[in-house]
Length: 342
Image (cartoon, rainbow, N blue to C red; front, side, top):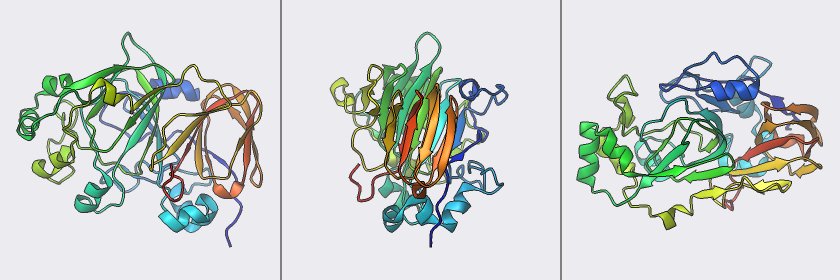
């Protein structure tokens, strides 16, 4: 029989990356900015970095790993309906990502591509919740402006024509409160000074089209698939301004108790909570990131916990219904709804 579990406050978990960043994560958490190459904090992670055994996995206060705890009692952590569909797979990875420099142009495979070429049920659709910016022109780059011929893309990648790749993308200015949905295959790059809460499918599959100046191993960009196969996962279609409206939302001016941040989709769910009065939450495995203020998390079966800016929690399904109050502002991230209803 499954046990009733309590919410767990998680420490920072910043596996070393190839690009700079991390100061905004440290500031949010109230920690010294010591990890120059720690631009990603993997929160509630049961996922490892590509090709590694343990890097990326979230540790628990008792010294164990969240991955192992979930595997030992998936129903308690994830709920019976989730387990019936996904087994002990959380179907979610959440990160804090602070781009201290522009990221390279890259994209991620779809579920079908990952099944065929990477032996994995998940590709890597993702979404960005912008929670802070710095610098004069915080920008993200998403989707080719015009259709790109396969031979042109092949030439860009072979010659590492970095300017052509970046210039071919739509440049979108962003501010805190904006959200950007990134479907699998969409080429993209996050600009310097953009700080996000990122939801994604639980893999570390990146096809790094612009690898020069970023990756030490020039063969690592294609995940061992080879150039011809890897380029097959790229969405080469043109994304007009009108088409981009389906991906970008502006929510900074919304202060409802629960603000839905992403449109309906089959991959994950996210809400911003404004707990000036008690906000009720249904039972669910979820990751909570406290962005502002202080408050309290109260759960039906898992006890209470104080909240403060910079806290990150993983909430097990068996803790039951929950309430956030006291004025805190937080982002709640959840896996896809069982049945794929968004």
